[in-house]
Amino acid sequence: EFLPARERLRALDETITAVRMLWTEKETTFEGRHVRLERALCDPKPLQQLPPVWVGGEGEKVTLAIAARHADATNWQVGLDSFIHKSQVLREHCERVGRDFDTITRTHAPDCMLFDTDTDLHRWLDRTGGNVWGGEPVEEYVRDNFVGTVDKVAADVQGFVDAGCREFVLWFRDYPSTESLERFIGEVVPRISA
Image 1 (spheres, rainbow, N blue to C red):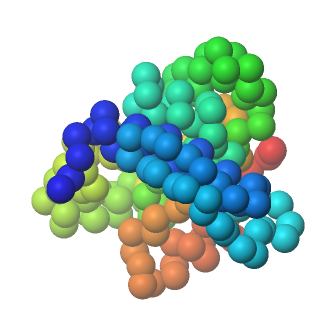
Image 2: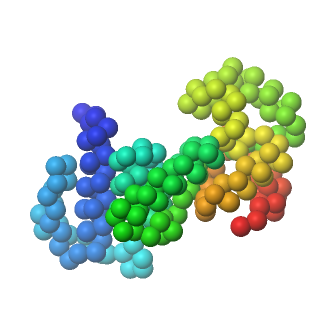
């Protein structure tokens, strides 16, 4: 049975709490609505640091509050304005729970594809029939993802870096080709200043 969103989020919160307890306590007893552990063991424990917990949702009331309590990183697939806004909301949740906002790595997961010209980009977009990821309008898709010329993509990346994004999870739309990946590394990355 697929739980309603509210219950899935409650289960997420409980699961992160329980897993962190398993990683750090000799025996774990936890009683939640969705997760119940009685004297549970997890051995061996992580030998170095704990595995990082990423929370990849964008919901401002609940998901970002969960991220403020538990996340080592967040992962959003949003445009720059939304990234800045969600960062501010996350900061407010962190303040409420007494967490240093800067201890959470904010990441972005855009589509990425590089083109020589805007004409080449639009030719590719025309082939999709306007049906790009999530069915969002083409203009929003181009604005919110790293698709376009090297100049456009480098400016987009720099905007996110300037807004506090520290990692990117790039979805190369020309996969299995490595052309956009190679161009990103060779032509975009050298233009970015941290």
